[in-house]
Length: 254
Image 1 (cartoon, rainbow, N blue to C red):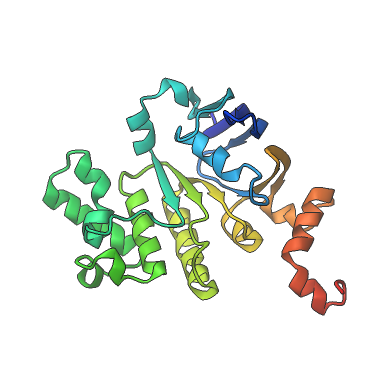
Image 2 (cartoon, one colour):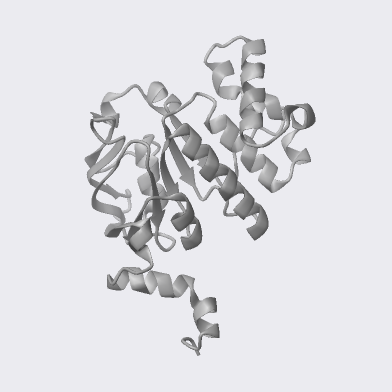
């Protein structure tokens, strides 16, 4: 069985000549979660967006289930891939239930069936439809809006989820609650996930492998369980940068 996602020598250069991705190759096996780590500008989001063709590589190829994304119908490709971003992208003039059910609705599913499915999705992400279905996005907290965004991404039952800093704007406690909810949900639904994050703890908690990027290159591809103890210099440097507070109290940082 081919990997769910495979990057083959993927490069991307802007029209101005800046190389954002440089010959990136790795695979994401079906039903697994991989986190993309790296400093801002390392190419994480650009790489993520090559999967649903929001970015077209300058060279190389991206395969989904063994087929080049260039050979797939764009609409069908994107319907088979859930996409969750930090800002959620909810429609402010639509109710929560309409936002959650948008994908089946525009796919031609009857309104009542879409509404029922939307309620099921809201329940799955921990929002009681009786309380939240008729509200509008501005009446929700940041965490609640993010739950609706996740519900919408799951609406078409996509086997693949792309997640770009989905919880980056949330406070630590709400973020932890969302991570717990997502981890339990992914375990039950067995999705393939590619997660962009700056949070090392989040990457360790939600992924089975971590791919570390720097200046458009893959500099490490390590099992999450081995990341903290890796002796690869680039990984050690990243871990130190993320654990400065802890190390300071241990006397390792001035």
